[in-house]
Length: 218
Image (cartoon, rainbow, N blue to C red; front, side, top):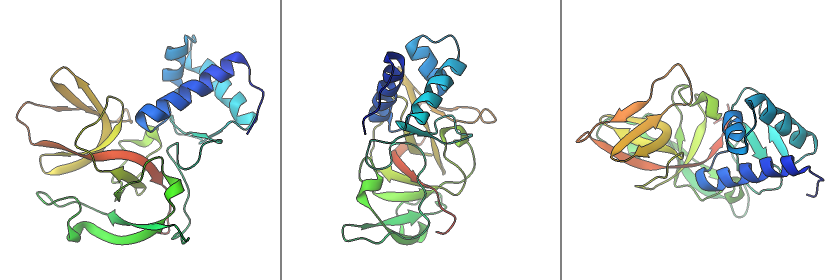
């Protein structure tokens, strides 16, 4: 896709690409404003709307990270629609993990609701499983209750990445933050407070979010 962009619009687009490459998810309006020196998030919103009009991106209403690159293959931003089971020659199957019981491995047989066939091109990185999201603590990242979060198993994460973490007897989806020896799991909904992982607490990373499927049919 070739579109004629202003210098500022190109800077915004480049920032979105970089953020997605580093964390798997696009920036918020406030993060764009801060990174590029805009006076307010409204200025970032104006540039995003201009990019959307030119076809460079798509915007998802009501999601602070609802930005999708139109010239990148697969799921580069929070939401893709999948109205039913995908079937194709190069499709592969992924287990759908529902509610996780305390003390059991996340891919234990009792947690798997079913398996579905998906297209590899839907995802930036090939996931190992799909986790059915419980609750709305990541709402402003475009991750909603009932969505299927594509997860790549990993014991490590970078700051800003969205992770699946096990904390004590609970499994949660949050944004990862580490400062020194302090780890926080950050929600994307102001109704929730950050979770601080205390030294010696039972904590493990189960994987990194690499995409999202939104469907009411699975």
